[in-house]
Image: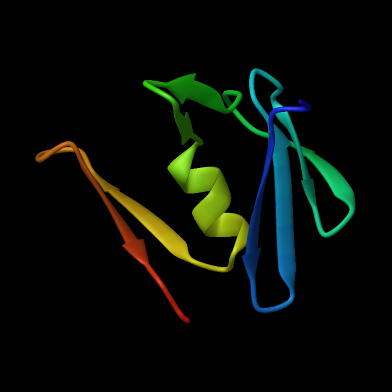
Length: 73
């Protein structure tokens, strides 16, 4: 009913609502550059925001237009 999704990794908890650019990260509101969206019944979220909130490094290669996420899990 609330169209809310949650990502949990170790001690981190990220909640966000569809079409709302404010996410809650460990009970602290933070603004995403774009809101989460539903596309073909799937929840799409900003990869950089979620990855960085979970402690990952995100690098962009302008030549290949490719994002790489360095996970530290």
